[in-house]
Length: 106
Image 1 (cartoon, rainbow, N blue to C red):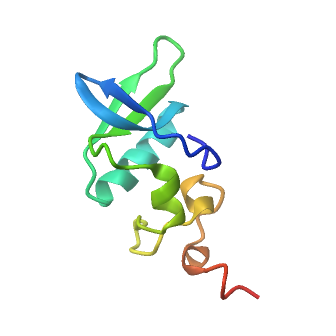
Image 2: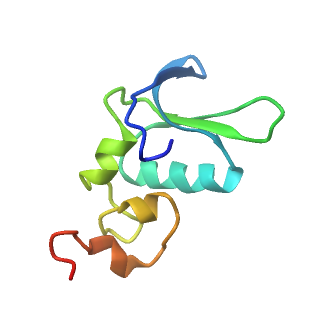
């Protein structure tokens, strides 16, 4: 799910209602998100989407919304720092950027 779309989607994955995190993602991105969300104590469900080789990923917490949790900095990275939108989107893996707040950036 792009971080510019705040719609909360609930889908059933493996017979369990889940908050959809992302859909149509590659195996590498699926693994990254699965590990990140499990680090943050979410129960993650993953399902293949047909023969396209992509996956959809969700969490069993129906109140979870990736847009809100990323921008409110509720998630923690693998090294214990707060997750930024760039880190979530895998645009930057530099840990120094994970603690920068927009109000202190000059």
